[in-house]
Image 1 (cartoon, rainbow, N blue to C red):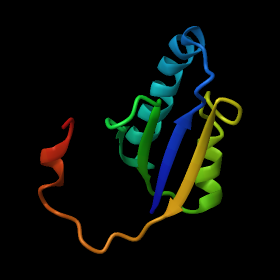
Image 2 (cartoon, rainbow, N blue to C red; image 1 turned 30 degrees about the horizontal axis):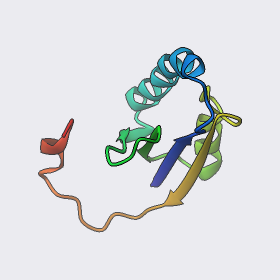
Image 3 (cartoon, rainbow, N blue to C red; image 1 turned 60 degrees about the vertical axis):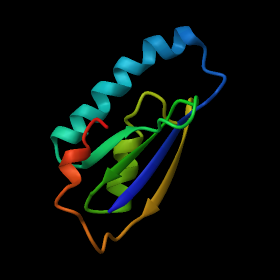
Image 4 (cartoon, rainbow, N blue to C red; image 1 turned 45 degrees about the vertical axis):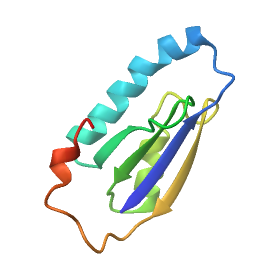
Length: 99
């Protein structure tokens, strides 16, 4: 499993953001529907355009190919990929969707 922090460059103009964000949204919805993205959302404690994705792919290379499809890649955002092995998962996790 992987945790991906995506940080959109602060110098992206409002016009660029307005044009690119819907394309970015379709990208993550596609991979959520396919099962590669398990949970995702924006950070709410910052003014930066930044979010976190929990992902599961067959390999890091497969994940890299998915990230390269994002309209922000490679020039408009940074992508920090961390490998993650959950040891405990609460049954209450679905209760927090959208909160």
